[in-house]
Length: 250
Image (cartoon, rainbow, N blue to C red; front, top):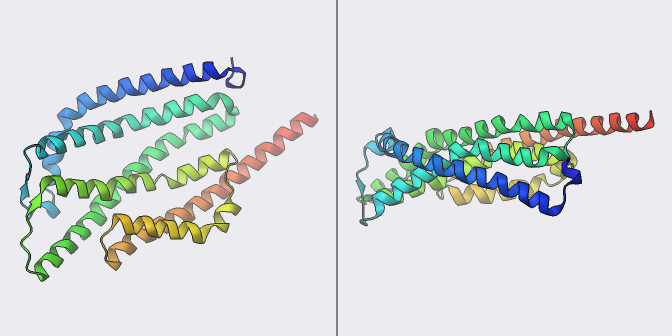
């Protein structure tokens, strides 16, 4: 039975099965992540930007809180490919064969972009921001007492949003394939999109021009890349529609 012929209840049952599979895999990934969290935390504490900082726990529960957060975030990263595949498998019966193959290729691209966003923010942006904060503290003759909870919360605040923002090209490509957006529309709203990206960059960076530009410029480039990808996808969609209409006439 094709997805077009399925009833609402059958759709819900299909979705429930896929959600159960994702939840089961996530639980297994959490168990695995319990063994990965400790070496990951130690590695991040021994990084260059953290070596000169003395980590303190201001509450008795801070270490276990950080440990659990790393376990769940690592589990999410491990589960991400399965989540994307189950999403694709749920909607793929409603797509043409060629569209299924194309959209399936979005999954590795999406994972790579997510990891690229994390890597960019951690290896390039995060050290710069930490050094900037230390310089400000030294100028004001402030002795910084760093809480391990605050340190890693700031790390998460800076890196995870970048991993999600780097999904923009894939999201735009997918929406274009579904004819929800067009490259003309994206070009038309460019100035509004830039403003939204500026606001997002302001939220995830300290109030300093250089670090703000280090976030904003890559986001602008991502948006322009998304427009180029949308144009390519839009041409493919129109070509597929034209071939389909020719087949109907024949």
